[in-house]
Length: 425
Image (cartoon, rainbow, N blue to C red; front, side, top):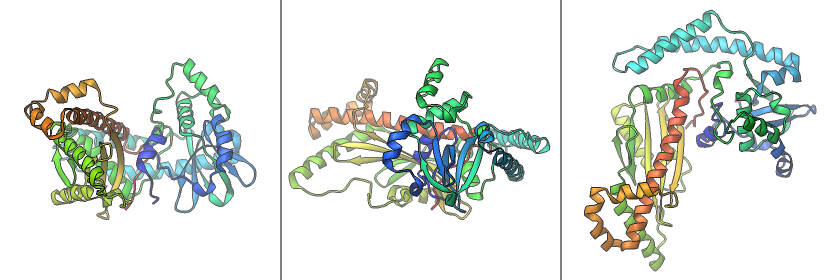
């Protein structure tokens, strides 16, 4: 299974929710992309036989075939034989996928402890059994086309903003999306009073279901269980991580003294030229799973037998100073290894601090009781800056939490869509 950067995927193809692995070796030269891409709303896959496939390049399978999302309407006009073959294969895969999902849901044993999860399973089991008994054989709006890499000359990728316009256009079922310019599509969307700058809606239900391996099923079940059963969540800074209630706010009042101390460390380093490293982050560790705070959270989850959790970590950076809010969702795979399902980071540099958040922190009883001593520690200006960074941290936490909730919401409608982007160990 390919390794993917989950944060980028969820922003780039949120509507599809399908794992995206860029085919770097097949990209068209940068100059050509810069010259042509602004006109295109979709990716253009140039085949060696001089034909062009228009859709969205999603990734590469283990058998070295590129996966491309195309509309059924476009493919039927491009190549009728290929269209008929793809529909037949997609229906065959969908039948196996429905049976696979039914068998998995039948293994679920409701306990009554989590009625929301029990109801979702029973509701989805009834739906999938109906689909098995009477499948809809009409072509879906979108098909997944597989093309051998050896048949592809290069791929001209559309910019992210252009793809988003294409997704909105498909969602609104505009005509001839693949062959119209971005300006034409955006103009029609505006006429329909569609804000095409917003993240595109979920289009996964407009694909036929596909089979899902045990790893992705474990991650999907973890996401649904987090929302409908037991929301396991950790928060912390440095190497300290504690379990908290779901969506619990970061204790900003306790953070302000740390920010002041960080400011003093920054000043001390400037005076002594002591090359201190960033607090709480080893930049040499390429994998998020290798960071110390993640290992601590995994250890706590292992100790309690949890199979998933969300963890949010405050990373103090002396330069600035500023705070980074890093948040992840991990799930345990059947092999026992942990997998990254979702990740988001936000910089709380102080620029995003709202007056409301700053007022809320200043009026916190704990801050009021410590204000005099904190100002002595760092001075009034330093105290004000600490308040500002604390307020920005609140905004950053809201940003990552909102992103997670949007990501999570996609998986609470159907058990078999959208497909899950995960990062394997």
